Image (cartoon, rainbow over all chains, first blue to last red; front, side, top):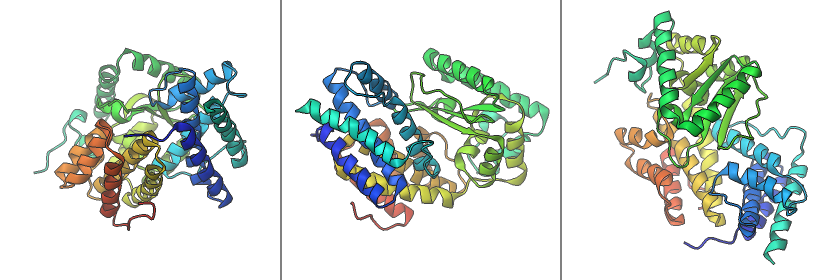
Length: 123
Length: 259
């Protein structure tokens, strides 16, 4: 099976997140934001030879490594952890997302940073 | 034929079975804790045991009243896609994100845990039925006694709502072309449908890798096959679509627009 390039997937998921945010659906916004962030990290990690192994905790660590290498302007590991916890709580427990001090606009802005970096590196 | 449950090892996943163990009895509870210590040692390879030791220490330091090892690890049924699941009660701000594993931490204060149990939250019930008690100041014992004495049971309708939401999102992810996410979301959605289906027939859902066997015993052969394949294989996107369509039909819902 041929998979779509991760950088394309990241942008498309981000577009979905923005649509859901505009529609006021916080739950779906969180789901798509997480999916977009993971795809962006995958794209960047592949470029920088960081092993992911389709494991969430490795992507979280990759976010830190990508920041250490100067690829990402900020360490997005905590955002990754937050979105992962919240989407699981929604998915498996039916709970509403709790973003703490962040707004959903903050989340989308941070995810977009990762997507833009992934796009820039793929050019 | 109904099997009599005489020990924690034999706890049948059937409504009412836990009451046969008389968990309010001190000897019966001591047997549960002994059994759980043995399971924790047997079911965690060295690396996982070390992570759990750190988690226990942090939970105690945070003032937790109880901690339970849950899910596939507690059952000794880990797969390549298993997380390490903990349920901490009495401490809500535990940080484990620096540990090298996919950890699912469910943290509730004591009141919220009781509210979840009374509202039929299946994860809270799972901790009571099959969770591996790592330490307990008494809240888990009280909860087990409550479940036994009141025939408390997870709410199938609650699970059905979660399953339908999960199916809807899984359908969209499958269409997005993101295979890894599609497989994970489909697996999760099928697990939720399986848990609802079992609960609605008074069967307690075990670990994810055991659900297919439980479904087969109920005659849900296709759902069982689809779920097992989503755990152990990498089905094609068309197979994932097909599995979701069938799962939708099982829940009695119409197929979503994305499929």
